Length: 274
Ligand code: G3H
Ligand code: ZN
View 1 (cartoon, rainbow, N blue to C red):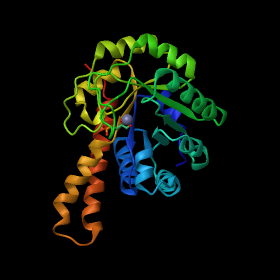
View 2 (view 1 turned 45 degrees about the horizontal axis):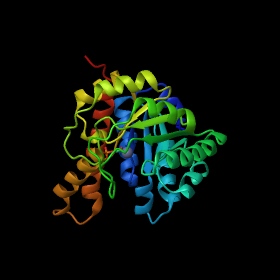
View 3 (view 1 turned 60 degrees about the vertical axis):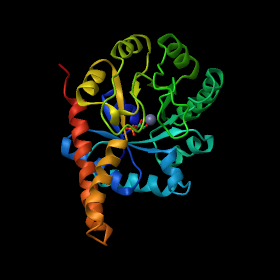
């Protein structure tokens, strides 16, 4: 089916967004969404683009082709974009949204860079997400495990930048391999009450099922998941690679393991808390 606008899935959310690195990731997200009977967002990060030699075209085309062949409702999002040239390329590659990541800049510079990106995206009908309050854990980050988004600052930030969705620092962090993050639910509630746009949780691989369901009940609308799929993928590759030479013999179970993880997350997030 044709790609669905990201804005539509977030408005109907909560919705999960899964990081796509290879074509198998995209196939797994589509299969998992189909299996669970829920919509999902395929998201390609700037890091993934860098892995593909800096070329956005091939991996975006793979994701679009997988979505076109799927019965699931899928959107396409460009994630954690630091480079201006890359967010400017989003519309021509079929993305319904992008996240401009200026979180490493000072507040004033973050606002200016994000405003420019939001204006560009809106002129082309795209949904634009940004981040306030560094969510640590990405390579090279000034990692601040206790980073928190201040609700009052978030309100001005959204007003000044015009973004459609806000990634918030509420206790999660990127690339956790254990689901042991403790979220600040009081802060999520305060942000939900104050901020007029949907809230996005990053680093959700490190968040347990109950915490995720509680976060969604408290107002998180987009749940970003990457590392959990890679854990499933790599475990299956490790189990199969020593016995097989043909990569299809271990990539097929790796893709299936990711699809199961996708279906499980979608079911968790869609299950009411309490
Ligand atoms: O933007 C992507 C996500 O925040 C993924 O984080 O790999 O820790 O699940 P994660
Ligand atoms: Zn993230």
